[in-house]
Picture (tube, rainbow, N blue to C red):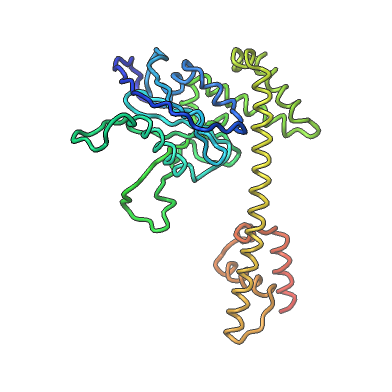
Length: 329
C-alpha cells in the first residue's frame, strides 16, 4: 500500500432522517458487527482498507439502518467518511447477489439523507459517493480480492449498463490479505479467532459449545482480541455458536439443493440424449448415453479425473462404465 499520511480533511455531517422501521426481533447480531460497532475499531478497519491514517473516531458518522432487514439479513455497518458513504458487510456465505441487496440498501440510505431536501430544485442535491465492501470469511476458496457487479445479474447484459453497482469482496480468512491484516490488528485477530472456532468444531466428538468456549479461552490467554473477548465473553460465545450453526445448516441446505439440481440435470441430459438417439434411428439406453458422453471426452484428451469432475461423479463409476464398454466390444 502507498505511504500513509495524516489526514486533515474535515468531514461534512449529513442530516439523517431517523424514521422508525419495524424491527425484526428474529435477527441475530454477529461477532464481526459487535466488534466494529466500536468506533475506534471501525476507524482502524477503515484506515487499513483505504490506506488512511485518521486518529479521531468521532470523524466517522455512523448511518447504519438498524432496523432495515432484507430477507432476514441486515447490513452490518454504514458510515460516512471522506465525503463517501461506506457499506461494510461481513459474510461467511458466498453470495453473488450482494450487489442487488446493496442496491436496495443504498436507496434507503439516500432517501434518508435527502428527505428534507427538494429533488425538484434547480440546484443539484449533493450526496456522498457510495463504496461497497464485503469482508468474506467463509470456507469456499476465493481470491484475496474480487468484485461482484450488479450487471452480472441482468438477463440482457450490455457492455455499458445504465445502472451499475460494484462490490469489492476481501477474503479475511486467516492467512489471506496479509498486508491488510497487518494494518488492522482487530481484523487479523478476528480471523485467528474464527479459524480456531472452525478448527475445534471440526474435531470428532467435540460439541460446538465446547469448541467455541475453548477458542475464546485460548485467544484471551494468548492476547488475541483479549480485551474484547474478556469484556463480552458470554455474548460472543452465544453469537459464535449461532453463527457457526447457521453456517453449517446453510451448507447442508446448499448441498441438498445442489444434489436435487444435479439429479434433475442428469435426468434432463439423459432424456435429451435418448431423444437425439431416437431421432437418429438409434435405440440407446440411458447408460449408453452416459458412455457416449465419456467416449467423446476421452477422444478430446480429457483425463478420467476431469471427466468425473465434469459429470460430478465418482471416478470409480466412470472407470466401471469404460470397462463395461470395453468388454462389450
